[in-house]
Length: 422
Ligand code: EPZ
Image 1: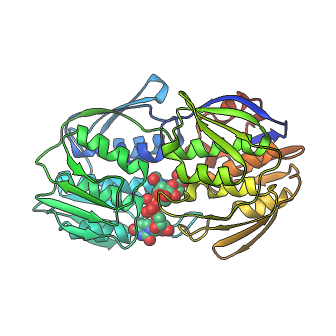
Image 2: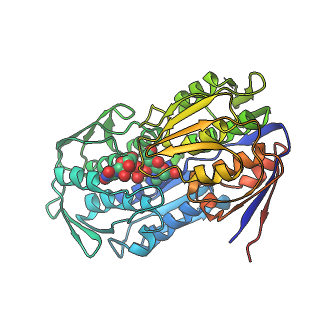
Image 3: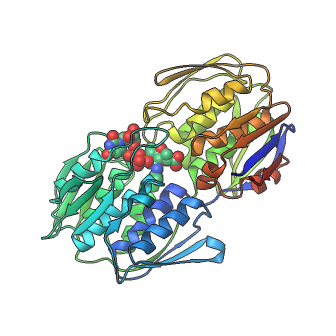
């Protein structure tokens, strides 16, 4: 397994290009299953999760061509050979469950493995099942697989989700595009990735309104046609790299970044003493003065503070002036980066869903281990700001969500290299 060696090297200056959003692409790709005509995605990120989703769609019989070094995905699901998403693929990537709604809507049946737990939590699918059953699906759990049927097709319905689940919103909205009649989805998730999905579905002929708000209305149509859609900028990669100058000093411009994607995150950075300004090309970030100040964070569904930036924010708070309390309200076990940061000299106490970080003057480089996608990048950020060398192992987690991380950070002056595993 490869590792990444980072050496603290002072301020960072320059530009970092931000890629298309992993979590938008992972719901846009299954949307191809809704139509027999081709769907082409541009600005797709080059990530291992995209390769996994490609493998899943191909296992169903869809055609997926990766063009222009992976930035263009030309897909077609004219003739499918299977409606089963296998455990072997789903267990590697939970987002595989996003084929459930499209398969059900177009073919009236789907067999999708339950993803099983992952490092950050149990991650059940009850909210997906409840929503699809509201549309008339019959779903039963057998041998670890959800067996879903809608022999007479899905029917529009009014459904209120108990929690604003991103994935459940995506599955239900995609399914409702081909249901008979109108669906009103209440307490829907409001993430930009959902707004992007709806934009693509609308290009395919879907009739949807309200995306980005808590109530989304979908008028079912008989069929959807092909389209070409540009994947929205990745707000989590954007937020991650905004923290690089915040932690190391200097000034970095994040190309493609827009304030609208990271408003609550940017507000927190501003309160901590980090200036974020929108330029024609993106977002420019630098510290207002020396040390940043501690701020409290509570993760919430969008537009609240994103859970996917909690680990990275904790890394910033490790050397902030004062004490920061971070409350993780979305996942039940998303502080595994804390003990690794403590190995680097951080002062962090975790009690259940709350982490209390008391800022120290300086982190010290150390060998640390990545445990999940966002924890791994928070350790890279900590290593950039630490004194000495940090080796982050198990970087396959990183490859899931950050394309060319070494190249992008080297480009702004970081001392970082990838060490090939034995
Ligand atoms: C999406 O996961 C993202 N993944 C996650 O990003 C992100 O952390 C999460 O949304 C929250 O923003 C993709 O978009 C591919 P949820 P998802 O359904 O859809 C519980 C990353 O790092 N829940 O909104 O799985 C669940 O256990 C990844 O890029 C149920 O209880 O998230 C969790 O505690 C990590 N029942 C909470 O809701 C359900 O049926 C939020 O889950 C579904 C979810």
